[in-house]
Image 1 (spheres, rainbow, N blue to C red):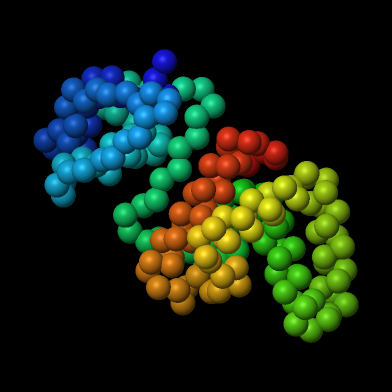
Image 2 (image 1 turned 60 degrees about the vertical axis):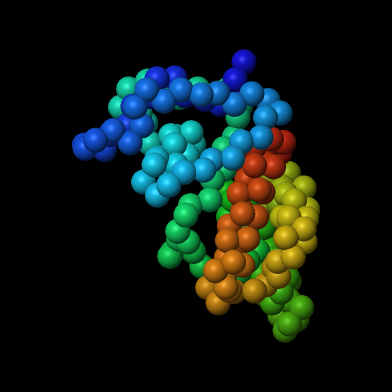
Length: 184
């Protein structure tokens, strides 16, 4: 059974069809590369596959439990925070807790503030209750493998580093979907 595919799909966006009668499938273990000229429908195809858009006709096939992560062509303008914050955002609510814990740890290391220590303690208990400590390891591992600095400001990074950070966020999200520990 196909992991992912299309069956006789049509997408037109109110004008000439971008995709007409498109069908294909991707089986487990296959590797796929998508090439084409500008305007050929590559982004439309990717948005169909991840569920961002629906076809005008035809069917998108996704095996139950499959998780799809996609990087946009354009860098989003509204992403802020540290590299750690952006990557952890791929984990939903648990990622927000991890980001807050990380920020409090940085504050404590820099200034030894009593308020940071109290916040660390409170967040530690929340992370325990959410069974989210394993997610911290996933974020740290992906950051390390991609050579990203956790505390670097996303806004000041080069375009390439921003793309790597967004890739890290997609990878962490994929890991959680493949091995769920908490709901996201």
